[in-house]
Amino acid sequence: MRRKDVPQNEALFGGWKEVTYAVDDDGRYVLVESVGWEPANIANHMAWESIDTEVGAVLARVRAGKLSPLAYHMARHQMDPGLLAGYARLFRWQVRRHMKPAGFRRISPALADRYAGIFRITRQELMSVPEGDPPSDPVK
Amino acid sequence: MESHLTPSFPHRQSAHCESGVAANLLTHHGFPLTEDMAFGIGGGLFFAYFPFLRVNHLPLTTFRSAPGKIIRQVAKRLGVGVTFRTFRDEESGMAELDRLLASGVPVGAQTGVYWLPYFPPALRFHFNAHNLVVCGKEGDSYRISDPVIGEPVLCGAADLKRARFAKGPLAPNGKMYFLTNVPKSVDPVPAIREAIREVCRRMTRIPIPLIGVRGIRYLAGQVESWPSRLGERRALLYLGNVIRMQEEVGTGGGGFRFIYAAFLQEAAAVLDEHRLLDFSRRMTAIGDRWRDFAVAGARLCKGRPQGNDDFPALARIVRECADAEDGLFRELDALMRSGRHGVRK
Image 1: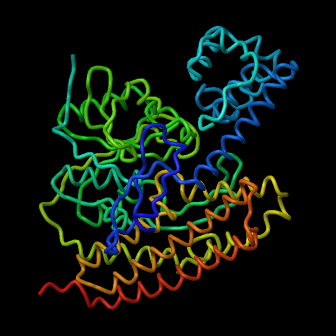
Image 2 (image 1 turned 90 degrees about the vertical axis):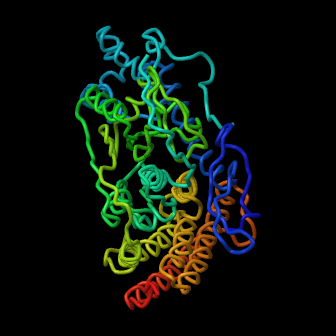
Image 3 (image 1 turned 45 degrees about the vertical axis):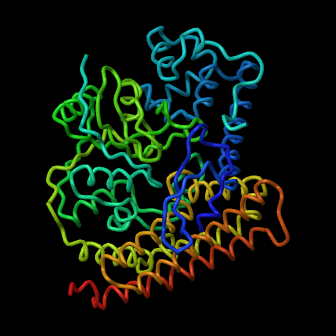
């Protein structure tokens, strides 16, 4: 890749830039700043779309009374029961039980606080899901 | 108010976190090293495709050696002492970090990126093999030299603790490392030769279909089969994932091939071996071909294929990369084996 060909397709990095290796006019490698590259932006966007789809599907099931709010917060944070169990210091089967409305209603305040702490939300926020569409793809 | 600052740490933004940390730590300790030299001496270039190892339900593609290997190999090959520590207990992990900082030692750390507040939101996934240097403490915040970020940043203690003890695959468990014994000077020639041969060997002589050049060919076959095996939607997801592993921040572009080309160029001067310049140019061309794969793949993902864009066409590009790398690494190994270079006149 030549220095003059280093892409500058802004999308992913907010205010900052990455550096990439490119050759200058003498064929010598230099580090060149870039605000981004379209194919990488597209692939990243696909990953977020996937997450958003999952979150939307889970949210619908929560609103239909099939899953607990915990399932929503878990999906929102790109976690599955295994990963959340790791953070919560629980077994996977316990997390799965808490994903059901009845199981979730029975958790202790202390455990609710532990879950809320993991997601950096209040206990009240843990017990509910947002109105309207969930926050989505940070790149959009 | 506690304030321990290691004397101004030589932060340099890098294309790849682990090589950047290695280079910056060594430079700090009086042994100047560029990132590409760290990547090369650390034997960072690799390829593997593991369909049975899933990250977010998608097969694992890697263009680089296992996390942690670069630092270990750089240290070993240059005769530098490095101490690694992991912790079961978060508090002792932070206490030990504080102790080292207080004695003026900058500390490398493996972290997850999901919990790092300064990381761009679009890149905050549960990726746990990130490396950074903690180079100071100011009150309840740490000064972080994160190689993929332009400037050193401040990070709150709670956030750093969370990142150091992130859970999931490749969980860091508070892993930290620091250099203990940096020799005044080292002859880099044997280190470079050995490191190049290791990469050549790994890419061409491991008889496992998923590894090295064989792995690249395996990926080509997989790419071709995705639409019929997985359906259009999942095929595009798999494709997007490979593009991310190849190009998302931290690879320097072209799946680390450009960084390696830069290393070969620098090594040509150190080894006094001009033929390495030719290998560097060939490696650059290979990186460009991987980039072509990403460009065409992204067009498919976006639903805007051009001309002959389709999965078989993508597979052809990948096979070209396999053939080119196969030839390059075999010839490069032969050159290094001949040993007729690096003789100081």
